[in-house]
Length: 335
Ligand code: DAH
Image 1 (cartoon, rainbow, N blue to C red):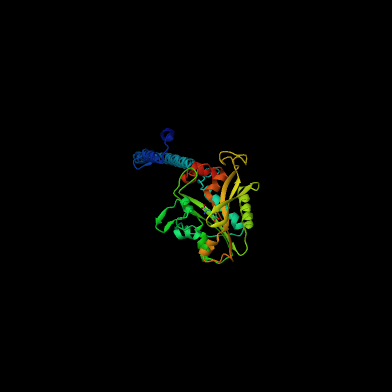
Image 2: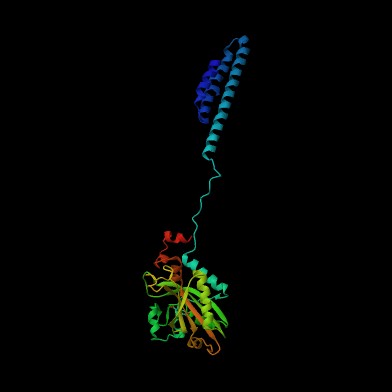
């Protein structure tokens, strides 16, 4: 009997799966199994041996069943442990982060410009990119054949409709639609046939306008100074130069101290120490007249700046195309 159990134990020692265990169990305990057969043999024995033999085989059977059920349990545990091991989850591992997007440098700059002017109580107005020639030029004191039109390299859509070349036509729209006093900026896209390291056929401007009964150039100077110092830093030196725009009189261009040489003179500033940053002036009476305002009653101040130029000077970007190519290596600098 010992031998049988010994053999059985030996036979299942290497078994690692329930399938094979079942097969071997059948070999011993199945209908035609070895131990079952031993039990059947009982009928061939003389009566006096039957009891002993029966008890012996039955305990053998019990013993074998116990071995099988223990082995069964063992294999089950082993399989379970294996799958637990395989599915192990380390909850202390840091999660995988999603690549996060970020604002485009032009949007960063635009939001900053808007934020500064909103802080000064300006509102924000918008106008269409497809504009009447009338609003883009004529009503801004640039009638047909006006030489200033040449500088704008205009994309015409048809005879009197064009892609706006600047945000100044929004001045006309707001003057016609709203009631003064007015104080607004108007950011947006503008278009000109021009492309090189500092020009793009589509770029952005921010226009600004103040209309009231008593405003003067000194207000304009104060506002431009507050704005530019806030944007470029409190230490930034400014220069107001007389200039010409058809829609303002007098007109000025504002320069900031060169961001590279800080005023000493370098290639970027053509050795002047200053960089041109925006145009501004007192609204021309013809603009008021065109919009149906009495220029004796209403005074206006206006200014306009290029957003790409602001961004390039603020961040030291030397090629405008970087702002439009969406090269991830460039954009992620601003994340
Ligand atoms: N519209 C001008 C341009 O595109 C910029 C400008 C200059 C706007 C002076 C103004 C201004 O409102 O007063 O070059």
